[in-house]
Length: 427
Ligand code: AMP
Ligand code: GLY
Image (cartoon, rainbow, N blue to C red; front, top):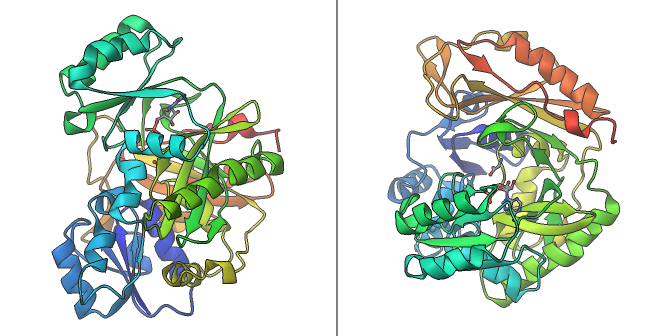
């Protein structure tokens, strides 16, 4: 079977690595891909939301499955585009319909969905520009810190958590009154701050059945000790030691089942990943957010822990026969450490030559922002590559990734040396 992956990050490199191991795979393509996906696939120079060019490519290359990595094309309706096209309608798209992608595309939609289906989440209110005075009053009903969320997609920057009421009111006025995040903050969700430890649970669903994939914790801040600006993610660990069996059972019963059932009852087609961002508040799970795709860099630890054939799982998603497949997981811990360009998540330079990849041993390297330039692999983004290692403990896996992080070099390389440290000695 010929497969097309859409996207260009570490997540898509991890999908490509895994799908390339399937005996069912013939040709693999990634659009647009990166220097890492080239090891397993042919890169195709088509933008991830250029649906007409994707259609032409899919037909010309007898693609039989499309796996969508990022949220952008999903929120724009790539699933529906395929379903409504006479030539494409029988080609499974791994990812939800446009309606399903609203779980990520609109914070207000996802909060309302959770309320409708009794899924535990923080108390909240949603306000438009015209309701700014009410919104400012509503804020006063909470204790600090305050959680303000732009309703729409804002490239991961739409959540602001001021720690006092003065800053919170100023921020809220900026978001609603001055369209700080453009159209994305034309509505703002104000919610209660949840105190606890964060983790993510990933679910693969065919719309009827589901498989719970390994849980993961990511490290969002740029600085060690979780300080500084938010990034796409600086590293990840799977499994999460504080997500024990009792906790995960609560997640399944109170969150996963009602989510899948809720989608089904509302006739929202969903054949893909659900990324559930959770807060563990004294052993009780609350949903912070849904994403309609896998996480990055969480994929770089979750996919390496799936032993089953991923292409077979995806085929079952398309046919709605996930219940017939048993998913096998690797019990080892996986850790990934992200090498980034100095300056990220602010300004950074691209085009730095990357050396030393050939000296890496015992780790998987998943490229994120890289490309080929002449004879060299060069940096082409803020997050450059993820170094994933297995271990019997977090310490062991982290140790291997850190050793290899020193072996790969480029100008202004930066990485967090404390990935997983907060979780050590707990497992
Ligand atoms: P999001 O962009 O929705 O992932 O939110 C960014 C981050 O804000 C999350 O990863 C949490 O760390 C934090 N956050 C969001 N909502 C809450 C909440 N209700 N309580 C505490 N922290 C939150
Ligand atoms: N690592 C967080 C995300 O993929 O949204």
